[in-house]
Image: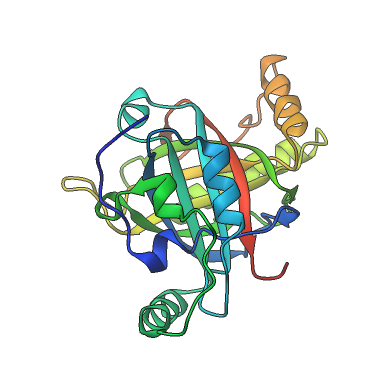
Length: 254
């Protein structure tokens, strides 16, 4: 599949690095850059994952990196792109300092036979940088890939991100009472917001399963009538969940 786009800078695109047995138990708060990418003709998502996992990493790499493959998402995304890259950093200071050092590094590098930019074309102009906070007490995942859902939300008038976080914490607690303790994250945009959209009212709620089976079990809970929002005051309006397959490609602790 061939699409047009802008190749993201080496420090962002090449940073979608490595390892097959990784955890996505991301820090309680992290800065994450989300970059949309289109596969170049003749390549697949699996090719992108394989090449990303073979990249050389160092102290200037992101703390964690993932490739997200759309399964059931807004069709306007799939019309232009094939996947997302998600690069995690502990803070904005780390993001800026690591990228600056990466750009300034002129030492020889051992590159994989196929470069990541040979496989996909990423649009850095369409990327967003978000602050991600994990809900206390929820699990992560240990493995190469799993399923995740993303809900795009807008706060009701007079409501705050703190209200949303407390609500999602209540939802997570309700699921935990049913033995479903999947990782949940609330993310808010910090850089790259679109014109006409207020960064103070929009957020996403991500649910990342420990395994694909665990995600199916959670979806079956609500299909069977369980209501995780019972007794809670919802401070926002959210979309139907979008379903993604997420591949762990690098984590600095591995």
